[in-house]
Length: 498
Image 1 (cartoon, helix red, strand yellow):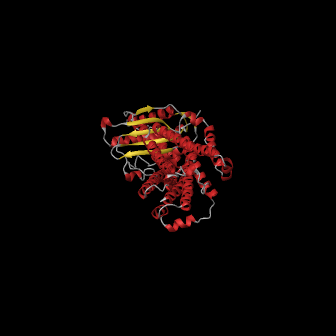
Image 2 (cartoon, one colour; image 1 turned 30 degrees about the vertical axis):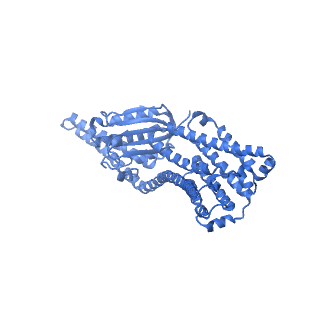
Image 3 (cartoon, one colour; image 1 turned 90 degrees about the vertical axis):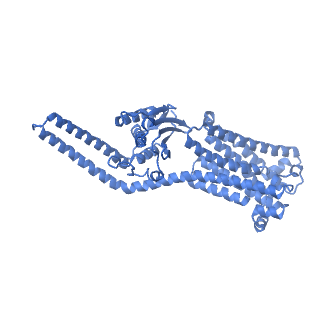
């Protein structure tokens, strides 16, 4: 069964390496690998030490044949103890570094010395547990040996406890549902592998170095080498290990799958967009030329009819309306053309309130009688291209209002714009209680030129454009939706420190 656990953690490590390559993933990878290393050493130690029943041997190693091959591996006790020491002392180190990385507590974020400080005890323990150094220090010094062994156990428990306190504090400080959900998946994985680690961290490397010793410190052993335990107790403990490992693996798989889907979806969207961008550019250019020609014709008609006896005021009113509509069409086509051809985004420090004000003004030009609830939970400065980000927020507000109108909510219809301060991000949330999004639309809604609305008025570039702008701001676009209940879209922007 320990073989299965090792397999789970190795697969988890590979998934982390493939899907994400940031510091958090590096620390999670370090936890998985160090635990796999520790379990490998313990498995070999159990095989070589023996003294357990045939049933337990089969339970631990799946078959006696595998156990025999492991038992006769050519490996010294010093190397075996070192393997266990590496896994035992690196796991709590990576765990605490991960917790520090996730923590948003100001003095921890500013304390660059913390990462160096937490290295001291693990490195010191690895030095002290070097086989040669350990023997020199503890030869005929049982009290010093006892102090080293006890101290190493205490700091391990301390590191694990501090890490979980920081993770719990961070979890309790998250207010946004989808952020909390993602963080819970990580905590489930961390908790599961930490439980497995704590069950086996009692295996001190010194016990391996002193394999043939009758030292009093090892007379009672630890639970998985304790002959007084029944087969049922062994099965319960190891099955619990496997369940914890599977639970953690499932949580990690769900987390990495979500990130993999985001990356894959972005790649697919890029390919689809590249395949139609040329045709779209030619089409837009042609329409633009036609409208410019219409503008010239309009001027000529105006010159002709000004000399006629027709009601000039009425004619001018119609002509002016036509001219305004023509200009609007040209403006919107220019926006579409820029979204296809332009990749230029200029980021400067901007108050998030300015983005909100700009987007609201644009929205009220389209919907002068509609109300938007605004909630500024933070007054942050962000790095942004004001024009593009304002347009992105405006697009989401229009989509939200259209969803509310389609749902016929009446006076209960509500569109909200909320600014959050969430961990490393300033988040712009647009929330509505409209129709929501069904599964069919969810699969296509970020595709360029796809629209579930009237195609005469919607080009289907809105959400694609919003997502591209979020990416251009080194952020991301996230959403939550339930059909018939409403949707929430989140633009996550990295915090800017002045």
